[in-house]
Image (cartoon, rainbow, N blue to C red; front, side, top):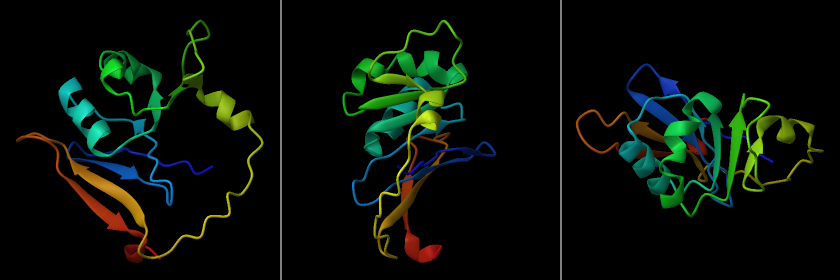
Length: 135
């Protein structure tokens, strides 16, 4: 399993790390996009796995039904009485899992991350970075 993250950098950017070859995205939401912009970024990035802090979950929950491509939501720091389902799981659950190396051949031309602007002047714009820039 690969844990990929989107996070805030000031108030200007969020980063999305994309795993290869499955092109699945995980999201650790630590930013304050309005729900329509959050929906846009999640759809535009083809996010399938979302990692989100519980304090942002109510905002996400309002748009969840518009995001059928999201197969799994992992909630960090949820209260003990939170109602988890088979699609919405506790972050602690992945920590307890027996991880195995997925043995993925990562190449310099494979996608690494999508960097989005904050969307203050319109829809956020994403730029795809490849491993070439970091390897």
